[in-house]
Length: 159
Image 1 (cartoon, rainbow, N blue to C red):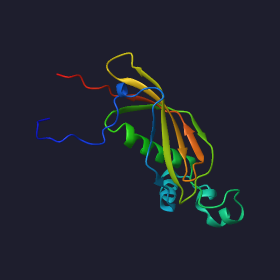
Image 2: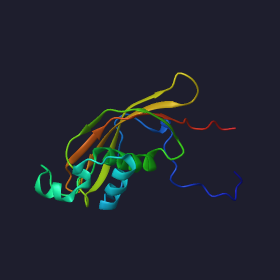
Image 3: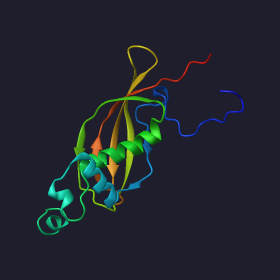
Image 4: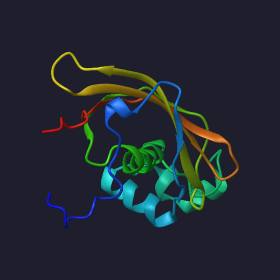
């Protein structure tokens, strides 16, 4: 990079910049009916709960246009990664996942991210970071909790 090149905004954290107990909050995102329809179609989730408005109106235990938990997870990951791991996240290594409540079209979700584990990988300058991600709706109700483990880039060495 030469002196005329501006610094790029939005780059994620290097694993060395994170410490256990630190907490971050993403911006929210409203999940629309078209988000649900597109996701259900793409994933092939043709269950009547997601595709049949009459069934939802007359027979379903939950009312409204229900959002699949997998879509809530995907949106939460997008919010989280854009805020913390842009260019620095190397791999998603696994997660626990617990759906706590429903999300329907028109709900807005945000993610509270708490760092629960940070350690250097056995080789090189990369590190492992585990977080506890709590997804809440616009009423502050927890709708999803997951704890991903990620491989993160280390801070570049100075030349």
